[in-house]
Amino acid sequence: MKVLALNCSPRKNWNTAKLLKSALKGAESAGAEVEYIDLYGLNFTGCRSCMLCKRKDVERCRCYWKDDLSPVINKVFSSDVLFIGSPIYLGRPTSQYFAFMERLHFTSLSYDDYSNYFKGKVDVGMFLTMNATEEFYEQMYKNEFEAYANEFRMLNGDVSLYPVFNTLQVKDYTKFDMSGFNEEVKKDVHEEKFPIDLENAFNMGVSLSK
Ligand SMILES: Cc1cc2nc3c(=O)[nH]c(=O)nc-3n(C[C@H](O)[C@H](O)[C@H](O)COP(=O)(O)O)c2cc1C
Image (cartoon, rainbow, N blue to C red):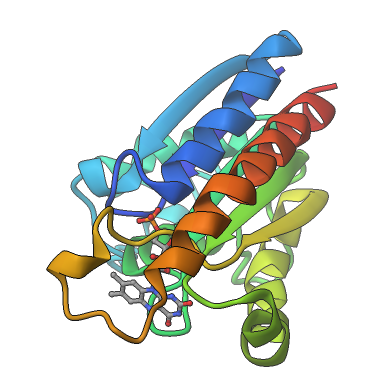
């Protein structure tokens, strides 16, 4: 059982990273072989339209552009479980998430009949972190982010989306012009709710690795 986690936050040990690491700990405890990758630590762009993945003489579901992301794409296709996490940036996943997704999706898309070249199965657990409250998420983001998560149906497995609300964005709010946020509420959520989210992430790691 191979479980891969991709962090699409630029911050290497904040909310999104912690959730992904907890999911991997769960997977590891269930005996899975795990790997963690910070996408922001890699050098890559979105699809370069080289069209090599559509050539008649090449293996399918491979990205042939020579940069740091192509081996990661190959790893996704050979994993049993993918955990991916992104903060919400201006109502969307981050730019590295989109660059990754563009490459992943295009390599498996047939330009003969728009079918899916990928015949394997990868279950996906997606974590979203955000300043938004649950109420705001339900009203403004939920439909859109479910659609982003559903793009992973191309991996032919189950897709679960786990949103984490009202995250702590900085350690000390008094040092920043961020009066739109209530530091006390943020800290309470961080101390009381976030540990539960980490535990749920751990349990997702366990259950998806079975
Ligand atoms: C550039 C930027 C844009 C953001 N836009 C939103 C947003 O539109 N909605 C939201 O709820 N949170 C937004 N946030 C807050 C982040 O989603 C939130 O702090 C998240 O937990 C950060 O993840 P991290 O701690 O793993 O880096 C934004 C943060 C940044 C830096």
